[in-house]
Structures are given as C-alpha cells and as structure tokens.
Image (tube, rainbow, N blue to C red; front, side, top):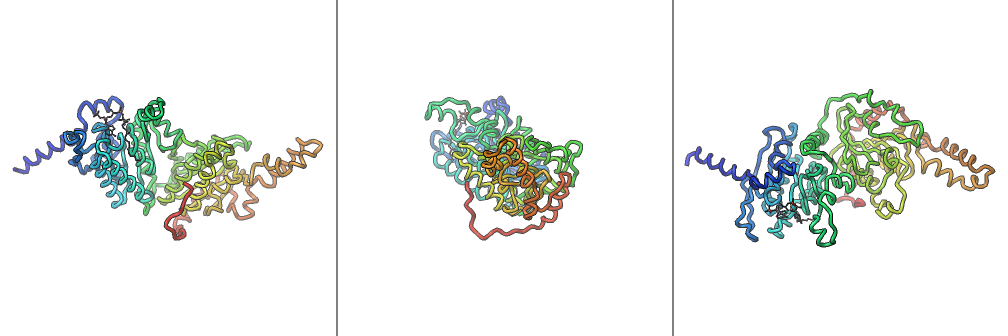
Length: 515
Ligand code: HXC
C-alpha cells in the first residue's frame, strides 16, 4: 500500500473516531445549549494549538452487550495545547458517547494526560460532562476513578488543576473536581451531585429537579463547591483564560509578571471609601481596586460566603492573592463558610508562590447556636492554620475593626505576617467599645445616678483608650500606622523587599489541619 493510500485510511479512521456519539446525540447536546466536547477544546485553547492523543483508544468491556458497541475515543478527548501561549494538558468528556461515562480505557486516557501534566509540570484542565462511573464496566470504572483521585491528590499543590463542569455530572465526575483547585460552572448547563434526582426519589421519596439539587447557582451560592460562575460556555472560557494570567505553571515558578499600571484613581478614591461613621458598611472591593494595578481584581467565589472576599490582583505587575473581610455582608464576620473559603485560597496561594495581602475589618467570629453546632470552632481554626502555615510574603492592612479572634485570625503579626499596617481608623481590641464597656463597667453603670449617660461616657473612655491602632503599634504588633492613600506604596514596598523571602517550615511529613 502506498503512503497515499495509507494516509487515506488514516483520515477515514480519524473521521470515524472524531464523530462523537452520532448525529442524534450531538443534536440533543446542541439543543441543550451545549458545545460538543471538541468545540469546547477548540474554543478554550489558542487557535490550532490543540494536539490530540489516544484518539484510537477503544473500550474493552464485554458484558451487557458492550462488545457490540463502538464508543469513539471511549467518550473522552485528551491532548495538549496552549492558552495565550501558556502550555496546558486537557481532557474533555463527550456526553454524546455513553453519557461521557467513565470506563476503564476512558479513565486510562485521563490518567495518562494527568501523568503528562505532572511530568511536564504544566496545569491540567478537565472538562467534565459525565454520568460518572460507567455502570456496565462495574469495578473497573470504580478503579478508574480511584486512579484519578489519587493523581488529583498527588498533583495538588504541584500543578494548577482546573475543572470545568459542563453537563450533568454525577458520582466520580464531581469528586475529581472537588479535589482540584478551581471549579467553573455555567448557568443551566452545569449540574453536580453525588446521587441524582432519580436515586433520591427511590431512596427517600423526595422529588427535586437536577437544577434545584445541584445547578450552577446552588454550587456558587450555597455549597461553595464552585469558584467561578458564568452565563455561557464562552464566558466561562474567558474566565479560565483570565485566571491563567494570574497563576504560575507549577509550584516551582512565579506567576508571569505584567507591566506595572497605576490604579484608576478617578473611580476608586481610597480616602473616601470608609464612611466616617464606623457602623456604616462599605465595599471592601473598592479598597482592593484602589490599590491594585489598573484597579484589576479577579474575584473568586463571588456569591458564596460573600462576607469574605478573595481573589487575584496585581501590585507592581506581580500577582497577589487578596483576602479581605467584606463589611457589606454580615459586617464581614468570620463564620463556617467564610473560614473555609479563605483557608483554601490561602493554601492555594502559598502552594503557588503567590504573596498574600490581607485587608482587615471585622467584628470577630459570628456568634450563634447555628454556627457553634455547624462546627465554627473547627472551620474557623482552618484560617488560623493556613495563615500560620503559609510561608509566602504576608502583608496585612487593618482598615477598621479588628476585634478578638478576628484580629488574630486575619493574618496578624502573631500568625507571622511579615508586615502589618493599620489605618488611623483601625480599632484593635478584644471587642467593640459598646460590648466592652457593658461588661467591664457593668457595676459602675448600674449604680450610677444616670446609667445611660455613664454608659456613653464609659464607651467613649474605652474608645479613646483602646479602639485605635496605637496600643498595638506601641507593642510593635503593627509596624506602621499609615494614611489610606499611602497603602499601595507601603504594600508594594513590603512585597518588593520580601521577594527573596525563604522561610523554612519545621521538618514533618505533613501537618494535620482542622479539615
Ligand atoms: C453508563 C450512562 C451513565 C453511566 C449516563 N449514561 N450515565 N451509561 N453509565 N453512569 C448513558 C445513558 O444510559 C444514556 O445512554 C446516555 O448516557 C445519556 O444519559 P441520559 O440519562 O439520557 O441523560 P440525562 O437525562 O441528561 O441524564 C444524565 C444523568 C443520568 C443525570 C447523568 O444519565 C444519570 O443519572 N446517570 C447515572 C448517574 C450515576 O448514578 N452514575 C454512577 C455514579 S457512581 P443512551 O444509550 O440511552 O443514550 C460513581 C462512582 C464513583 O461515579 C464514586 C466515587 C466516590
């Protein structure tokens, strides 16, 4: 056979292998507003950069008539490519082929590309659109998932792992994403659950739609399982591209540096953000934007535990991770969800050499039976643990309230912040003046001729003495009390001189965080 004939045969085989689950299944996919797996890869990666491997892999299952079924690519597409020149390994499950379900060979394709990513030290992106373990392949599909989970765990903190949920994902198809760094969901398209509505109905007799059980909004607002929410697949891919501008290829590199750009001072005037009445809220994102390069900020988990704001920005062209209390929501308290949210992000930044800038304004941990019973002790401790453990440069700015455990937890000097700055509006104390005066002057107030007047006087006395940054500054817990307008200058300088920071953690196999 001539090369020409063999090439024709190759093309024929390729055509058959890339057809997905056939016209009808593709039509169903398109009707649901979904791209095909192949279109997704093309749309996410740089033009012509995708190189596919293992196109001709076939499943080897024999039971339940599987020997009669041809599943192109065994329902998953794998390969390498680039995003704005940044190299990545990628896989996309094809729902049109047996519901994207994971059989043994499907799993082997995924684990092979994950192994490549680890060896090449580049990120792995998984586009998940799968009914989970392929039922017909029994324990082999479970084995496949086990192999993926093991690799997700080994890769954690070594290379960035991105999961995109673009279809109904069940069982293992959501546990692998849960082990990765960032999960992207799209409204009306993404569904995530361990067991679907059918199982819930048969076991518990409860009826619920896929959307109500595990739709994109549920995971963005209630469970916190997702990190980025969008309205369409295109918007989701733009978010991924943006994320890649902030993170490094692997844990031995720094994120790419960009040219330094001044913040948009006309839009964000730092001197005017905090209201003069300390009880009034403000949007802490305005503070972030008033100090970050070009006022740029990529917020993560925007609609989950919104009392805590996390995300990436740049200072002096270099990526930083912002962690900030949000006075607009629940006065910025720490609670179960906001603690989880912050702690995980801190660990991501620490793993990938991204300095942390913490902005503090909170009355403390949220009191209440619900929180206590939901385990606020354990969850809140995650913040203490992750800040204490982090060895990247840690810069803290206390904007206003820093009371009690909240003061300590939000990257205080005591958890080894490298630099702690405070605005003149900072109030650093065990608790707010009202609460404090009521407790320590209770007797005096009760016995006074005019208790209300005495209470006010005592509150003011306490405010003058403790509700300021100067006691902490006098003890060296705060390095400098600075004007708000000096924040960018101080933080940038602190980051610059911390660039060679090389803190060595005590030798151990690993710690035991309060998971
Ligand atoms: C084999 C599957 C499949 C699976 C879907 N299909 N899931 N085949 N194994 N797990 C097939 C269907 O038979 C169908 O094939 C095609 O994919 C499309 O599925 P539909 O049901 O028609 O689609 P839809 O109505 O959109 O529903 C999607 C779905 C549902 C919600 C994902 O299919 C479903 O509930 N699947 C089962 C989910 C599940 O329980 N998986 C096992 C999880 S256990 P045809 O030929 O008709 O087109 C697991 C173990 C790991 O993953 C756990 C780790 C901790």
